[in-house]
Length: 392
Image (cartoon, rainbow, N blue to C red; front, side, top):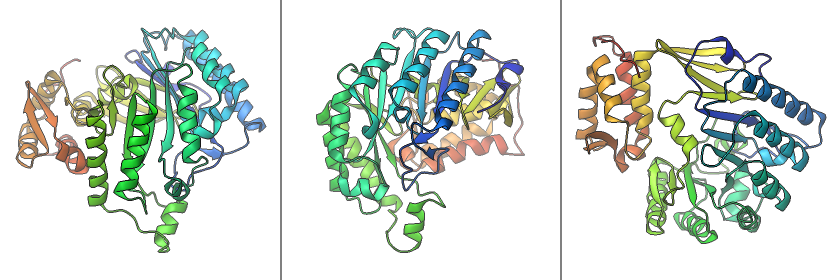
């Protein structure tokens, strides 16, 4: 956690989203390379971290940095691993720091099945949380063991039922392309999530990160990594099942019942400035001349405003409707090569034009590295004239 909130020192547009990082878990999963630590919830380090986070919340609130925040996401790690007392204290501090009315602000909290209790659900709801995102990953016990998860399938189903004691807006995270996971197993997990009555499902292809226990098992020949075709088949199967169950795919990895799209996700894909609090949390600030990313009080990246237009077009391709037509037009003015790039992507079947906008196709989402890379390369082309970056 930063000793000083650098975001307060740089002139910037108002923050629209807030991310709060809880870097603690019961255990680290075999695929995890996130900034987390397996630690007992009663460890003094956990209490000290929460206390510092509360102080930082009050500091940014007094500075007016939370006055226009429209979505809050409490992630990790595992926020529910904090336990009832520390988690309720943090949520109470958040409720004192900003308006958490459900009409004005979406407040999401991540939860894992092994640490979600009736009391946590009721207290979180009373403190202003209005959306729960449960890290299930699979309803197949064998797959869960491969991932090193701390819960089983029965515990995941119990957690969803517990969440529904207060929450209507419940999301379930699933993973696909896991070593040893068949398409039939993935289909059963998607069907289980639908039958459990969640309103939102995210389906992420597994990324095997170097240095993790899972990667070492694959390198040792103990497991076989899924290839791109298997992952694509899994994603198509998930889409088929979820769409037939009344969900719509509103971004590359997320499906929602009507009215239950995640507002915080959309803030990231539309270039909204966001504030990150907690260890390794990233803040994104922008003003008329540049976009700045800050982590732990250190500026990581500065991007001219014209290049930020290209980045926003690329990020917009994660959404089903694509980037706004006005944004794309401004980016083309600053980088004329973007027009040719989009036409090339259209010829390859990765994007299409509809209702005046460029938007991704399913093929574009499945080949995201090609799609996103082709767009972002426009900001790095040395031979393209750059016009002014119109004000947003």
